[in-house]
Length: 266
Image (cartoon, rainbow, N blue to C red; front, top):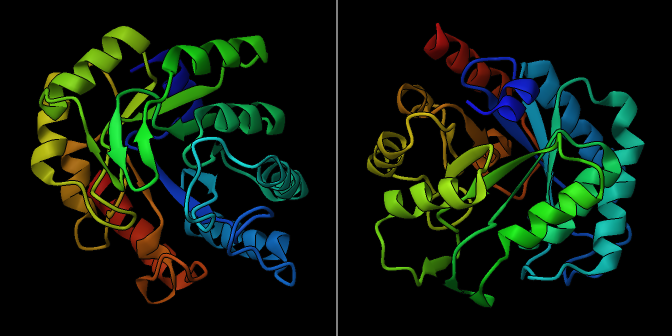
């Protein structure tokens, strides 16, 4: 395990709950009548009451996503997190889809413990050809004075197909060698869709010394199986009212999920 990963996550096999903000200014679905702070605060409190090890703020509602996020969106994300800082009692992270530089910037500005994004690879995606620059993002983190901030690399992008013909475990192993991420994340094809257990097993076998986490689609009835393989997971949709990604967090679903996590972790 990397030093940063251990510093952020004290619990073995940490589980990160998603706070999906409503659509932010500059996004097509933005609704100025929605109280973004109040909605995020309710989700945050539900996740913390359920016992999640960490939370992550994301802009999943800013569809269609951008490779360079609108400045108004990044400013509003930072504002919302700033308004909630007094309520946050667990480590928190940030993800500005699909922009590594904006994710690092907002994470650094808000005091986030970690960021998640696609930092490596080349993809054909719903948003066009996608080719992030891990070297640029990691140098940006250093320039902003946040070398302590962990970087979680998603190596199997949602809404996209890798143009790199190497098998997923080889791409993950290469990313670790070239970029030294603090964790590698394995995803399904879209938000809320699970990564296969076979993919998790193969990536973990290739990276025995690197944290490997399930990034999407972990459900109440699968979390025990996932945690037998992975070093943790990130969960959002399963915790929502009716299991719908775009709804608020359901406190009962969140509490039930973490009860199953605690049983699986022993």
